[in-house]
Length: 250
Image (cartoon, rainbow, N blue to C red; front, side):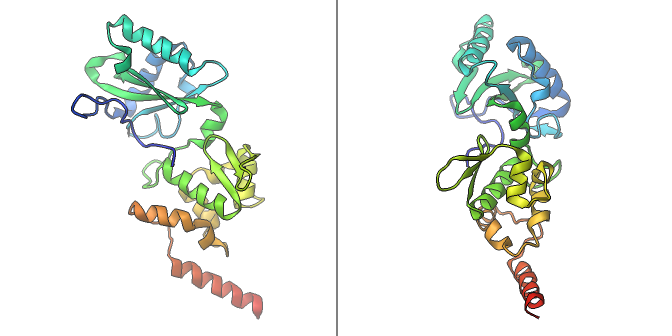
């Protein structure tokens, strides 16, 4: 998959991580400090579990790609590093849709550093797409994407956290409207809130007759990671399906 969990971009000469986790109480002051050196509105752009979990492995912040380019942000961050007589290459990196910054926690290097990922795109879409797992859940944001991709594949679509729901054959866009995506994947009575987590998605699909097909890829992927789908047993769903078939044929 295309997403990562936790900051691991900045490393020392021996491969050691130069950034660490950040406590929830330090998130808002750190984001406010970042607003000061970038000139960007970032407080409302916190993605995933940033600012929600007791600690975070990095800060995921949405940046409107129509307001500033990656190169322009790199220039701003590099200018800050140079003002501190530092090599910008040790502080700023680019990859994919992101600009990464080795960020002093609350602007104070004595408190250590956290990796900030400035993620370029459409902020409204990113708020939906890049949701993290529920607080305290064993399922992360990555797991939600795996389950969405599995369901989409079974129904003839392709799920992209950047581009929304695509036609599996042509790769052409089908929808980037979260409510419409929920209707296509879960049924006409559902909305974006039903796609918020692995738990909410699974609650809706667990009794469907095509359940095993919907979760096939996800179950395999979860299994490799030592996880199971909520309440998921193959035998249980097969029993439900057989019972339903008996009702229909009577």
